[in-house]
Image (cartoon, rainbow, N blue to C red; front, side, top):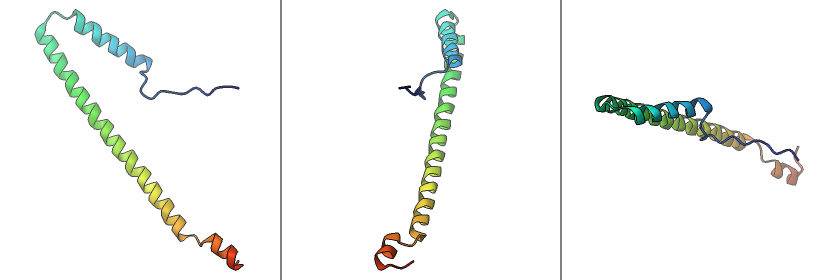
Length: 91
């Protein structure tokens, strides 16, 4: 039996791994405290932006899913009850 490949959404892509490696080497090799401080502050800002973007996307995805479920519930409520029709013999 062929097994489907699962994709881990949290697994880093190759370019992300290279980016992490580049930053790690920069931080380890940097001797200038001011440059390290500026880099750390920029990375903190980037992390905050990514967290805000992730939260926004999660909220939008949840709102979209809720809207779909509400639409489905309305459609179900609008349909005549098929079991009642079958029991009474009505068409």
